[in-house]
Length: 228
Image 1 (cartoon, one colour):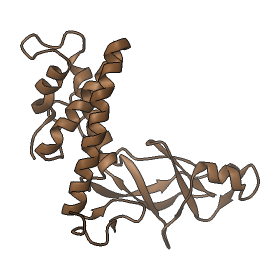
Image 2 (tube, helix red, strand yellow; image 1 turned 120 degrees about the horizontal axis):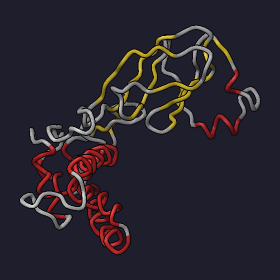
Image 3 (tube, one colour; image 1 turned 135 degrees about the horizontal axis):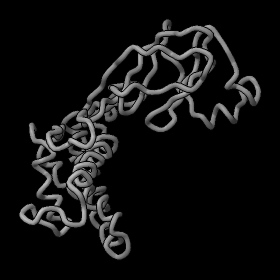
C-alpha cells in the first residue's frame, strides 16, 4: 500500500512495448495515466473493495426528477430520506409500471419515495419535490481524487498483488487507440485481468466477508472458512 500510479507507469509502458528511457511514443503520458485511473475504477467496481464508503448530505433540486450525483461519490448505493431509506428502483421499472401514468416525471410530492441510478453521474427521484429537500447519499468514493490530467501522484488503494491486474487493464485500454490486430491481441490481457480479478475477489472474500452493496456491509458468505 502507499504506492502511486507513477510506480505502475513503467510496467504499463513495458506491456505496450515501450520503455521509460525512450518515453511514450504512440501514447501521451496523460493517456497512460488516464488508462491506469480507469483500471482503478473498474477494479474497484469488480472486486467491491476497498470499502471506500462516504455519506454526504444532498439537497434535492425542486421541481425536477433528474439529479446530479456530487463529485465526492463515484458510485451511488443508497439514499436516506428524512424518515426512512428511499426505495431503490430502475428507470426501466418506472417507465414500465407507469406509477401515475406515462408522465411520472411531472409528479410533485412532499418527499421523495423512490430513486434510481442513471449511469455514474446522475440519478432520478420520484416524485419531484416542490421545495428543496435534504437527504443523505451514501456511495463508493472515487479511488482517484486527483484532478485530470495530473494522476501521477494518485495513490493506489490496492495491495501489491493487485498491481498486475491494473497494468493488464491499462494496457488493453490503451490498445484501443491502435485498433486492428494490436487491439485484438490485447483481449488476452483483458481476459487475464478478469480472471485475476475473480481470483482476488475470492481471496478477499475469505479475508473480509463484508462488501458494499445495496444494504451496505451485508455479509456475502455465511462462513468465509468453508471453502478450501
